[in-house]
Length: 351
Image (tube, rainbow, N blue to C red; front, top):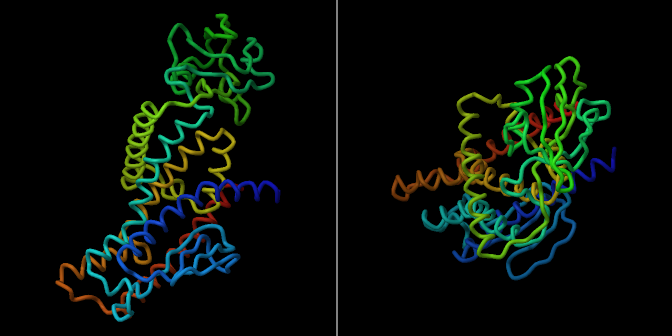
């Protein structure tokens, strides 16, 4: 159990670590360029494990592995010398939004770069491959083996797992014919998909696990860049649709929101599928967290941006540092309570 937990935490750090670092570097770089004093740039949350000081900034690696921070002087107080609060509204908006902007840009570099590295990834229009065959299932009785490529079901060409599942589900209890490819040979076999009550928990109606046909290859830059940018656009559209479904109430909030434990579980499951799915998940999380962080919630960058915008609208008249600091503190407390609540829901879902 402990080894599984450590593995989940490790995969979570592999995914969230670069995203958090990119986010904090966004704040750090723009703050330094804007002559804002950065007191500490930390990866993880205290207590400190390692640290060193260079110039006016402490660089630290901290014990709690989830999270990070870029602590700038005078974030809410305009009276602190060289602090963020002393800068113009335009500068503060740049520094506060830079973390999310860097996270949005991160997949633009990550996905094309991943295409240039040799790894196992799906073949476009390559079809469906059998990745597992359940013992005693209709598929085993029909002679289907791991590694077989399913070309047709009942004479209909199938290119995705959704195509195959739709045809199979439409023919529950009826005989279906599968045309498969095995070692460049074409074979035809028949089977009968099981009824729901006859199907063991966790198995499909015919007893196979399906996945896309994959290949191990790398692409040259002139092919990798458009492929990566295309994937990024699809990722943005998918994230937009997911948020729209959540706002419309089509997906229950408790099922759509995950805390550190839920993300760790999901990351572990995806990591087991290979490097490419893990990279895609990293890109998705990076873009999603960028949007969430810009929401006008006190304690998040989006909440601080709202105060800067209000000051701009009021032509330099700002809310007092004490009031703003208190509002952000209350927001952080509420956010931490929500993290605890979501984590409890994650644990119950696991149980």
